[in-house]
Image 1 (cartoon, rainbow, N blue to C red):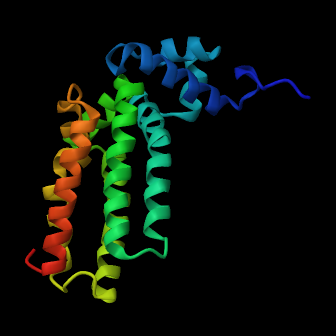
Image 2 (image 1 turned 60 degrees about the vertical axis):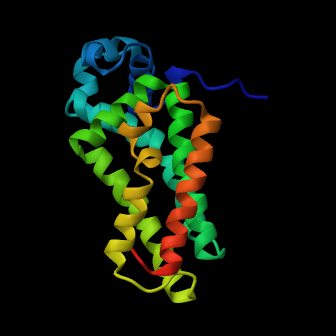
Length: 204
C-alpha cells in the first residue's frame, strides 16, 4: 500500500493554502503575514506571491475553499426531485448546520467569514449569491408546482432571508456562539415553519 502523501508532495499552491489555513486556525487573520505563511509552507514569501497577489487574496481563497462543501450540499438539495417546501426547509437547515459546525470546529476561520459578510467582501458576496440562487430556484419550483402561492419572486426571496437571518447570516451566527445548538434548532424550526406558511399563503 502506498504511503500517504505528505505536505511536501502537494502542489505549491495547495501547500500554501494548507499552511495558511493552519496558521489562521491558530492565530487568526490579524497575526497572519505572507512571510509567516511562507515559512510554514517551507518556501519563500516571493513564491507565495506567484500564486496569490496578496494576503487578503490568500485568506479569501482559504475561506472559499471551506465554503464549497456547504454550497455543494445546498446545490444538491435544490436539484433534487423533492417538493419545494421540503427542499427549502432542508436548504435552510444545511446552511445553519454547516455554519454552526464550522464555528465550533474552526472559530477563527468562521470569524473571517462573518467579518467578510459584514463588509460585503467578494468571497462573502459570491457565497451569498450561490445560496440565494438555490433558494430562488426552489421558490420558483414551488410557484410552478402550486406548493407556494404565486407572489413577487424578489419579495418571496427577501422574506426567506429576512426571517431566517439569525440562523443563516454568518455575523448573526457568531452572536449565538454560546447558545445551545438544540435551542437554536428548535427556534430555527419554528422560523422555517412560519416562512413556509407565508409562502403557501402568498402573503409575502
